[in-house]
Amino acid sequence: MSSTPLSFNEDLAISRGNEADAATAITLVPAPTALAHAVVGLGRFGSTHARKLAGLPGFHLRAMVDPSATLPPDPVLGLLPLLRHVDELPPDIASATVATSDTAHAEVAIALMARGCHVLVEKPLCLTAADGIRMLRAARQQGVMLCTGHIERFNPLLHDARRAALQEAAQRHRGRRDPFLHFRRSSSRQSAATDSVLDLMVHDIDLMAWLCGISNDAPLELIERRVSATVVRARVQLGGLVAVFESGFGATAPEAVMQVQAEDGPLTLDLRCPEARRHADMDALCRQYVAFSRAIRGEASAVATGGDGLAAVVRACRILDA
Image (cartoon, rainbow, N blue to C red; front, side, top):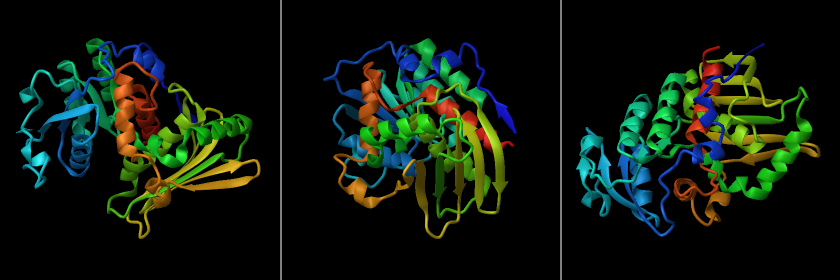
């Protein structure tokens, strides 16, 4: 067994959760003010973000940025400016979404923060710890909020009451050798199994830390890792709890399942459950943006901070690079 502690010293000090990151969000926005917002990257995810933002109170979608895209055939988005570079954005843009390719997340986010923008970056926040540290430094220096799109935090199945119960159960389970949590997440897309760690498994790594109240500087200890042609399976210890993560591509039946070992037997949650999503007051992406706006205003928020996103990436890389 081996472990890699997070030891980024000064930079980690601003990455331990909402309290530390919120302290660097100096530019507070009054509650009634709609944020002039831009979306950078108009692929599948970026277009979804833009369409959602176009009708979401609290945000005023002003522009989209993509050097290679064309205006979508959409009655709302088709009327918005499509720019080629963030330098072309109007000076009053206050916040932005980064939905570019993962390799461009760091540079685009840093460029936006240099303009004074609060930034929500699609997960993963970055691909390396070094890039994540640069992003956190930029947020601190510019006095803006950096957040990460770990959208499963806003799954209606994981409401406040259930999260509180899970934290209590986690506290009782700490120190035991049997897994407290078992995650399975797969996609029908075709790609190498190891690609799923930063694409899919990172969701569940963040979920475990958030649900169980694990600090961002807690080291992930890799107990066992198995890699097949389609699936990566890792057994880890994190925050005194053992967990199993499985992720992969090429699945005939995609899934996102979390199993909790409760005292009265296992509890299985289908995180893709359509029934739960159908009865939610708003979908997870809307709820994430509401939380993002709260974080910008300095209010308590469940949105994943830049520090949370960096911790998830470092832990995923610990599994990926073993």
